[in-house]
Length: 326
Image (cartoon, rainbow, N blue to C red; front, side):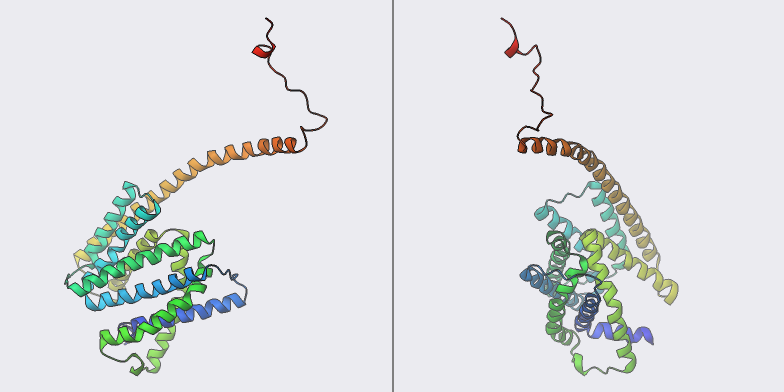
């Protein structure tokens, strides 16, 4: 009974419900700001507004993609986000992905595809919506990472400032999208006490979900966040089989195993490359720290007119041509 209520709420008003999630997240962060858990750091308002609106549009397009396509094609859309992100970061940010990373991501995508993609039903409108959803989602996640680094703001500060724009965008387009996909009025739905309880519960849970999303993307990368998202998909399939006794086939098992291998390889290669970068950076830091006092000392001598009483005349080797006897 409980699972049925949750499914009705999520499938009926997914976009509108997401706007409520973001509104509750903003209110929670505002309380945290009032309690001085973090500091408010305003920065470029146009960037924040554009980022928030883009995030809201990407969520709406993903929901439209699910409505116009089969579940299998929607899963393919989510799988395409990783290679699209890699391409965009390579082209516009000069980021390099080693062959080891590319290979591990390919293994991961193959496993998740085997485990989740069952039917592929293509149509023109659904394909266009999926393409737009992929592009906007990739750009929004890349911006989540770059904005935090460029303006030196934390994930909490960025989420707090962008939440109102995301929530307002989804609240304006949500009822129309949900009504278009279900042919029902969101606000005319029969909101029983049980439904309201689970809506409130989902809003409270969304606070941690939204916070962790911005935190993971800011501290790692959009690709790593997508890898964790596919891990969540595999865990949902596994727990659904163990706890809810959902139907499970050898294909699901094989796909999950392949995906786990890809995730392990990705984690391993990322760790190795990070260690190599740290090893390369540390000798440079040592040289700079050794040269720093010498440069500072020489600059102080120049400023003091030669260094004071303890200065000695420059000694030139006797073999220098300037002092050689003819």
